[in-house]
Image (cartoon, rainbow, N blue to C red):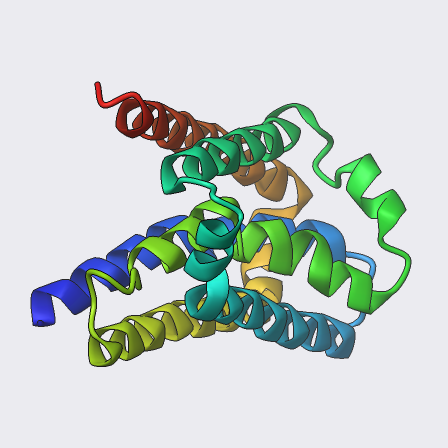
Length: 203
């Protein structure tokens, strides 16, 4: 049981990527006051947790209802994740397209912080797979959900601390970190796509 919980925590930490969210948070909140940053961080964490909880509860039912195999969802999620990673690698340090879409603080909390930075396609996929009804009991699913929420809590703490971190890395540092994380994220995305293809075609 402990090993399963540790595996769930590590999996969620990898796909939610609280550390990788820092440069995204810094980019979209750089013009904001400290109080506004804290408000955005809290709302982003709540929205991300809500989205992931939704898919834990009904995600598998939805996929089964519309007859979508989990491998195809994994492939689609990997493609979306890869496209987002490309914007981190080749975009500006404060992505012009994303900032043009966020007019209010509530928008910034939802996009791109809550989705797709925290509640990413990979995180949604992990939430569905790690709580599959046929494989896990209600108790196991509840404990896995607690692991997911603990990672979101860590992400919130890191976002709140990002102002202190930003003092040491600055705009240039944030841009470098963003591109590095984008490269790592693209690798994870490709791995998800290949794994989905492998499962779908029974390779």
